[in-house]
Amino acid sequence: MSNGGAKVAVPFGRLERSLAWRYLLARREHGGASLIAIISFVGIFFAVAALIITMSIMSGFRATLLDALLGGEPHIAAAVDGYPQEEATEIANIIRATPDVLSVSPYIEQFVLLSANGVRTGGVVRAIPPADLATMPIFKDGGEAAIAGGFGEGRNGGNIIMIGQYLAANLGLGVGDKVEVVTSQMRSGPVGQTPISKSYVIGDIFRTGSAQLDNVYVFMPMEQAQILFQSKGRYQYLDIRVKDPDATEGAMQAISDATGYSLLLRDWKTKNRTYLGALRTERVMVRLLVTIIMMIATLNIIVGVVMLVKNKTRDIAILRTIGLSRAGVLRVFLMVGTALGSAGAILGMAVGILFILNIGPIESLINLAIDGEVFPAEQYGLDHLPAILDWNEVFSTGAYALFMSMFVSMIPAIWASSQDPVKALRFE
Image (cartoon, rainbow, N blue to C red):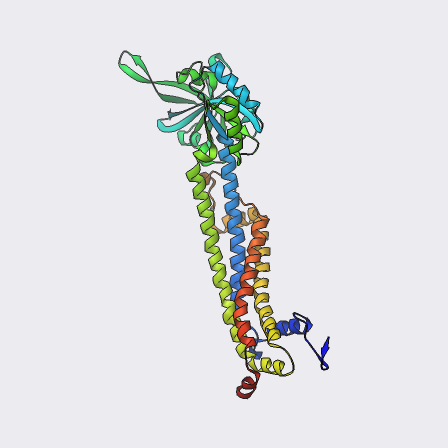
């Protein structure tokens, strides 16, 4: 297109791109990008990489902890301690036929005192029928090791129990050792009221991946627990597992409709509201903190591009006199600032992704460098540093860095386009 024989530059065309590229690659002594612009590029790179790595590790922590939590706790718990065992079984069958319900298992849960090798500590006994071990996701083998160890065999369910790994370590127990379980129930004797207690044999030591569960839980056959806790012929709760643990509200409504609203229902989200809220708040605050750091890094682009404009004032005046419009100058320096931010964002995304994809070897290398463990398994209850690469998080982080780079580049670009070529040529 022509106007009076002069060509009009195409917006973001070859001329403007070549000018922006030339200014970026020019040496500093020739008025190229300043040290501050380079620092802004490095800052954006580190901020993007740090945000991707941090959020991926936090997502891995959250997923691992929730998997362990949902494996050990019912998605929905229904209180049936007021019903005889036969009636509670009928209610379980009704719930089992409800849409979206995967399994229903009765259980008893009581706080106890555990004693072994001169050590005493608190614990939680979870009693379930041996046949229902397969419904517990925390047991990777479906409870086969416990069954092979004699869990549920013998008179009244036998005396074989399962114990969490860290709880067993605290008590100095191994498979085949004995532990005394002391309950809060009392019985009368010659010396008055004494707590009911009994010794049990460790048939299996389990590990769920959650220190919270592995440090307190003991699993016991249902028949034996009914005798120990004086609950013969009764269950305490029904463990209800649903297809989508994040959408328990609909399942709870369907269960209430099917049972005539006769049960007190409580889902895992209600029970762990404080815990989940803390995870959510922590995630939001970390994202906010790193986002602010990224914002500060992009603000350096303003200073870098302003200094570039100062160095190129004469060039801008010459370009204006030979026909480059104010909008053309604006676009040139907008591309310069955006290119700095985009390059930092792309490199940061690449490094963040590679870090997460190779987090296992990187963790091993760090452990070797510090001659220890940066992530002690005994403390966190996890075998390795968990990380889940969330592609939505990756691309949203890159998009945010790109947007901020374009936004802050507008300020020096507008200033460059407002330069008076006559004054610039006179005083430069």
